[in-house]
Length: 158
Image (cartoon, rainbow, N blue to C red):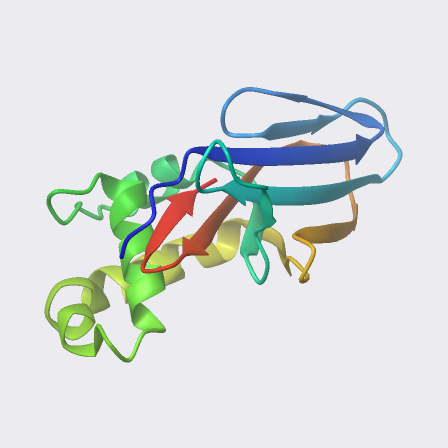
């Protein structure tokens, strides 16, 4: 049985910074190092309690992920857009159940996307069982937060 995600709750705490935009852009406001703490929850049904998005990998990037993938010349795999294709490839790469699908449709895209992303990754973190993670101090600049929460057999792009 597939569950539909009703609500994704994100709590971000950035010291010496401000946040704006749907891509969770974090820009430092001064010359001190900044820290970013995230707390992610998913809620499957409006009547049920929220649950932590545990074991979710997040990237702190120096550019938007769609821009990175597009500039690398990658093309989406229908019916997904570029970011959806990356999320699909990423979640299927780790799934033994979808091994053949991954090899047939997403493997080449996934390898190329990982190579394109690598020079843009400032840091990565994985949320704990409570859906929390903290990035180490980072230098002032403009950054983008990106993650893929695995939800049952699906995913949510954050």
